[in-house]
Image 1 (cartoon, rainbow, N blue to C red):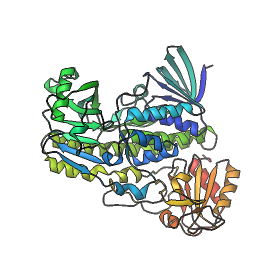
Image 2: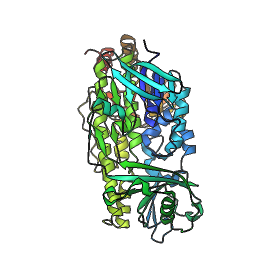
Image 3: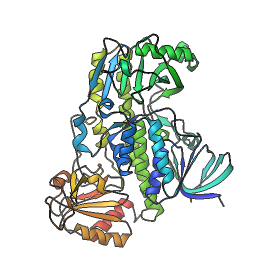
Image 4: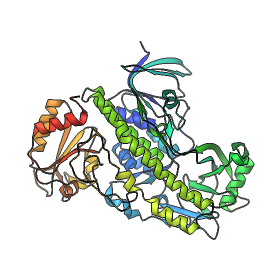
Amino acid sequence: MADLEVDVLIVGGGPVGLTASLECSRHGLTSLLVERHEGTSIFPKARLVSTRTMELVRAWGLQDEVERLGLPREDSLAVGVGSSLTAADFHREVAPIEDDAPQSPTYTYICAQDKFEVVLKRTAESLPGADVRFATTMTSLTQDADGVSAVIESAAGPVTVRAAYAVAADGARSGVRRQLGIGVEGPPPLGHMISIMFDADLVPLLHDRMCALYFLRSTVPCAVEAVDNRRRWIIQTGYNPDEGGSAEDFTPEFCTHVVREAVGVADLDVELVGVMPWLQQAVTAERFREGRIFLAGDAAHVSTPQGGFGMNCGIQDAHNLVWKLAAVLKDCAGEELLDTYSAERHPIGRRTVAESLDNALITFRMMEGELTMQEAIALQAGRRSSEGLVLGLHYESAAVIPDGTPAPAPADPYRTYVPTARPGHRAPHVVVSRNGTSMSTLDLMGTRFTLFTPHGSGWAQAAKEADARTGVHVVPIEVSPLETGSVTVTAPTWAEVYGVGPTGAVLVRPDGHVAWRIPDGTASADTLVDVLDRVLMRRL
């Protein structure tokens, strides 16, 4: 018998693993998270928190705190290009703040990973059912037909663990992925990179040049990232082993030289905080599941930093997976539901990696002189908004019942998001009033299935009956276009955006994606039971 038994074993304590732990608790599962490092990352390897991730942060009750820890909103949207931070050829481009307002109750934000992880870790540790252990290494992992077994070690000694499932969120060099024999697909490494984190008083030099990101063609081409827009910054540059370069070249003296060249001030007072070598890659794992073990985050897909996709894609992996694990473990779904994790997230991971590669190639071309700064600015500005990719993604799997309607086809699917409640898509944000309080349709969703339907359609009663018959919790929400005494939720445009008539209904999964939609039809508990059976694969 194992020393410790939990529902889910999570390997890796970065943002993806912490999200998995947090989501397990929200869905009533017990989990054990093990992370070999003693604490959260001191390097902000990621900074951009996408609109979709901020929607999850909002659902976790952490939006205000993450915003306080992030960059000022106006600086989060600015990108600069020049031969140095203080050069005469410097150019600053800012995306309009109002561009993202209508499509979400929140927005893309810059919050450095070192701060973001602290919030996630503290939250995960505070929730029931969660056991979060840093400074703990997993030394063995096996699986059989009934679960997974592991041995973990810390200063307190070895502990044996038994879990129903395991989530490998152990990064780009995932030991679990290698153990499972899962290869990766994609081009060879794009470059050997160095991140130099430093403290310096740059604000007086950048009073009208503040940005979240700077691309510089100094004597050492590099990118500069603002960590707190006060004293802490990161420079990313690279070296070529084929030309004799190595990470050892980046001595404290040379790193200080790189910083001063990037800033354009030869005697700048610089305090080095840390230097981290890393490999720039754009690869996707061949598959995301092996039996009872699932890959998530960088263990499943590794993006280039350009675009800020990696952490966000991984967080949404965990969000997609955990509700399915909970449904199976609570006997509300068939085991086959877990196959839809790879079916849904593998195409998204592959596309995200490809888009990050395209972004990286623009930067490389500028650094190599193939693009002028003005051309690079235009291309980067054209790809800065990725809401079409982030919010417009949709799933096609057995956990989605198509309604025969075509997907939106905007001219620029990378940038342009078209709200739709077509099955497989994220349920759109619509401003509603609930008991006189303005909120979003997204605020009405929780960890259960949600059925949106017009007031008086009959589907709310059908949902209650289906809930009683299946044991699958469905929360019916009736929406009216007008304020009435008998309806608590009103929204004049909801039915139009969601594509339903007076007797229609939209069933939304616990991850916020639409499972089923009927534009109009006779309300029936039998219909909903059949839909739930199909989505959850209860009859297989």
